[in-house]
Every structure is written in structure tokens, then in C-alpha cells.
Amino acid sequence: MSIQILNFTTAILHVASQHLNRWIRPPDPTVFAASLSPDIFGLWGGEHLDLDLQSGQLSEPLSASQNFWREVVSTLVPAMPEIFPPKIRSDLDGLARLCYEFFCEVRQASATYLAIWDEGYPALLRQIVDPPLGLTVTGDATLLCRPSVAVVGSRFAANWAIDWASEFGRLATAADIPVVSGGAYGCDAAVHTGMLTTQFDRVPALAVFAGGLGMPYPRHNIRLFEDIVASGGCLVSERFIGAGCRPHDFLARNRIISGLSLGTIIVQAAERSGAMVTARFAGDQGREVWVVRPPYSDVRAAGNEALVTDGALVLGRPVDAALELAAALMS
Amino acid sequence: MPKSWWDAVREIASLVVRDGLHQADEGVMRRALLSSGFEEEAIIKAFDWIDHAERSGNVLEALVMLAPRPEGIRVAHPMERMFVSDRLWNEIGRARQREVMNTDLAERVLEGIRALDTRDWEDNEVRSFIADLMADATVSGDASRAEQILKDQLPEFYS
Image 1 (cartoon, helix red, strand yellow):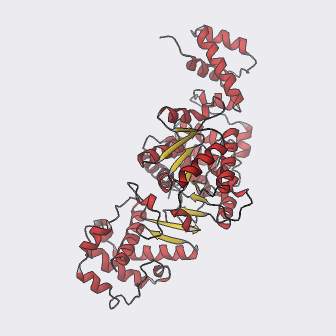
Image 2: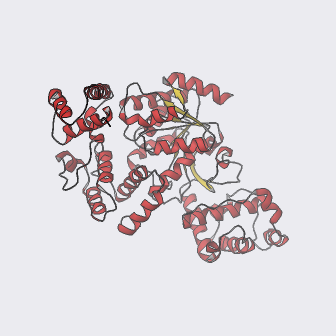
């Protein structure tokens, strides 16, 4: 039962963190279980909340009423002051309403919700310093738990970078290597488009949004996102369903891209760019960083040279990269 | 300290963008660089680099990225006015007037949209696009400050 209470607690924390626009550290499960008072168990035993929570999954809240959330929030939040910051505790009714509205939107979007301690939440992402407290996912959420590689690069990509990303996408699909990217113009869209041009039934493509799942960005890639889901891939977000993109959301999103993967491939990056930020996140998270060698000296790939200088592994042709990565993922 | 070959590349970029010199006017450019104090070796290396960059695609685009940005009135290229949505153009103009965007950042935003037809973009896409580019421009870590500036100066845009 403590895992059930933990999942509801982290779901409430996730909603609160998105509302307050600040990351909140999730409770450690062991410490959490030890700190639960008998009163909470008593209140949670079904008599007070009148709920069947045997499964421990968060499917029930998707159809739960606002009264349900009011009861859960008013039960858990005051009982755990060390977990919930004062700002959260000051407006329990507002927090309950936010939780109810959030899960209504998740249901309406036919999305899956994964709290951080759910068994379906990717273990690799849980290991980073500041993991998302929860994820909303449309499509095949099981892809999140498979070993994958991230591919990112400049929005203003050179032809050689587009070609490299597209070809790598096709080869990755053939090798059944899940590929995570941001869905942006340029290199990100190229790798997923390349994956979708294959004739395979299932394309293991994962796109992580900076905004909510209901606000796909860029809009011009909406068809790409629909095709990803229809072909067996998935779309992922940390944000509320209807949340738009703010400047720091793109950087926060990049930590998820690198955190989901065993390593990140930088196809083309300017010296100061979002792709370089993703590379830095990958390094800080202890993941591999690979960089594509530009065929010519290209001012738009100055970041590639800087990464090589910093020790990133250099990738040559897409086919060689795909073979190398397939072997690495299998091991 | 002698001027480097990279400074020579940037000077060539200025000659192309500011003075409208063409790549074929190499002789004119060489004389201009010599008179600016560049050494022959640096000039040779600079033109070698440009030859390499030309093979990467659009050398003009690369040189425009290197050129120093002039302050003062900016005259829009006719193609920009055709393909940039009024919504986006107005928001960039307002951001510059309120000093949320400086000239350099505005040029980076416009560079980004030169390859895109934004005429049918909706408000949320315009908003997200500017946020995306400002995130790139502030990767030094001040992205939250960029957001705060936007909220303060353009509240109707960043609600």
C-alpha cells in the first residue's frame, strides 16, 4: 500500500511543481515508506477514501472526481510537511482542482501517465539529478524503458547533416534501435522522418516535447508527430497537456532527451546552441556523447569540433555508426 | 599583435554584407584587407577557409552569420517581408523597442526564420519559436532571466 500512497504523493508533487514552475525533489521510496504514519494507512485503508487501490497504478485518478482529489490532497499534504513545501500547503483546494483538471486532460488526450516511481517510468531517466516527477505519453510507452540513443542537432542544418540524420534513422529502425529526439526542425525531424520512410511495421521513435502534448511544437511537424504515434513510436512530455513553450522549457526538455538514452549523437551543432546543451547534459549524466564528423569545414558545425576536443567519440558514416551502436546497446 | 586569419574572414564578411562585394571581387577584397593591416599569410588562409566553406553549402549564409551587426535602422529585405508573418514581425519589432531583444538577438531570430514561411503561423507557434531561439541565445544559463524579461516587457505575448 505504501507504493500506492507514494505514487499519489509524487503525482501531487508533479502537478504542484509544474504549477509553481520549479522542480521539487521526489521523496526517496525507502525513507518515504519508513516515515508513513499509521494514521495515513488508516485513512488510506478504504474506509475514509472509499477506494480500491490494490493495483498501485494511477489508472484510477484518470476517471476520479474532483471530490476524490480533494480528499486525497487534504489527507496526504498536511500529513507530510517535510515533502510538500509551504506554498503547496497554503491552498489545498486549488491544488486538488489542478490535479483533477490535469488528469481529466490526460484522459481526454488518451495519454498514459507515469509517476516517477511507477514501474513503467524509465529507470535511466530516474537516475539523473533532476528527473521529471511525472511523464505524460501518447503512443507506445514501453519504448521508454528500452535502451535507446538520442540524436540531436541544429535547426538550421546543412544538407550533409540532414542526409546523415535521415540515413541513420533508416538504419536504426532496421536495427530496432529506439531513437529519442526533440522533434524540432532540421536534424531532429530528419532522423525521425528517416525512420518513418522505412517499410517496417513498428518504428521505435520517441519525440520529447518542450511544451505539453496538446501543444506540439513546431506546428509544421504535427504530421510527423502523428505518424510517429501511428507507427508504434511515442510522444513524451513533462508538462501539463495544454502548456505552451517558454525559453527555459527547451533546455529542461533537453535533459530528458539525454536522460532517456544511453548516449547522445550530436549531428551538427553551432558553438552555442541547444544541441551543445544536450551534449553537456549527457556528459553530466554520465552518458556517452558521440559527434558526427562534418565532411567539410563548416562554420555551422563549430560545436562538433569543440566536442571532439573535449573527448567526444567521433562517428563516420551512418552505417558504421548504426553497427557500432547496435553492438553497444546489445552489450 | 598581428591580425589573425579569422579576423580576415570576418572582415571579408563585412565587405560582402556591408559593401555588397561579390566573391568574384577577390582582388578588390585582397587590396582592402592589405590596406586594413592584414598580412598576406592571414589573407591567404582566410580565402582558403572560404573556399572550404563554399563546399559546405551556402557560403553567403555563413558569411552573413559572421558579419558584425550594424546598429541603426534595419531595412527589411523584400523576401523577408514576403515570408515573415506580420504577427512575428510585429512581435520582434516590439521586443526590440522594449529592449527585450538587442540587435544581435533579433538578427539571429530573423536568420532562423529566413528559411521558413511563417505567414500562416498561429500565435502559439510564434510564441514558441521565439522562445526556442531565445533559449539558444541564452544558453549561458540565463534562460530564466530571458523568460522573466519577456513576461515583464511583453506580458500579452508571454502570458
